[in-house]
Length: 253
Image 1 (spheres, helix red, strand yellow):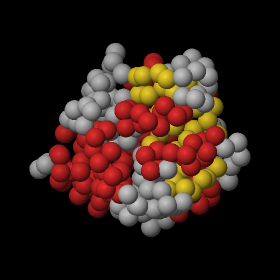
Image 2 (cartoon, one colour; image 1 turned 135 degrees about the vertical axis):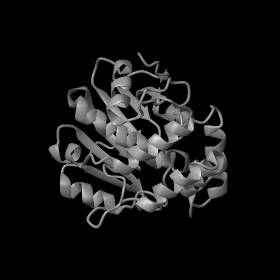
Image 3 (tube, one colour; image 1 turned 180 degrees about the vertical axis):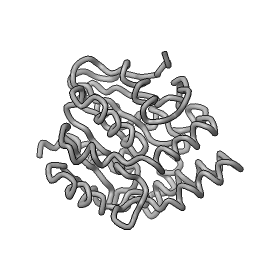
Image 4 (tube, one colour; image 1 turned 90 degrees about the vertical axis):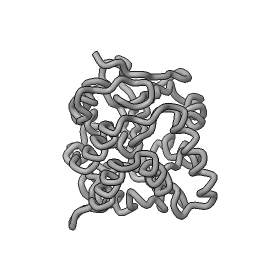
């Protein structure tokens, strides 16, 4: 069995948090402390990230299979950020009966843009994949810079992101490449349209990776999806706008 690292904070309703590409669970650290006043927060390192063992093949089915054993038995709230949102949607597809509420933070059921769907240009992901082959560190820096592009205090936020991810060794090149393939090829829109799990989408209106048009697109798939747009926030609102993000998570509407 793959050893998955997790950390538990607080008490109450379990809220499982899945981080983004190339990251690990400590990127949430400050915000998790805030959330632990309202939930039992369960921080998970994805396979091959942080202190978790790698899986044989970093694909949605194997990732979900590795994570399920560490989930609590009671129904959970599940929040996934970016790549973590894609994995959270795959978990909702696999075990909807174990999820009470799904929060998609700066995520998209189909990450890549098409003529009929808003998202990231496929060329952007392919460029990251190409640079990875040459310089992993430079790729990660460019990716982090995209997450705070155009934001007030962007340099300070970039420094915090760098410091957070440097708390653990970077994932292997193979895991990073596989993560990009997951983002490039996954299409989980059917999970949204089936309405088996309560879903809230939280986006920043300054996000350079996930356009706010995704909110309207998801509501066209399922009018019961709750959409919250955070003013002046980018791709990592748990760093830049923690209070607004907390309010969006706790909102009962």
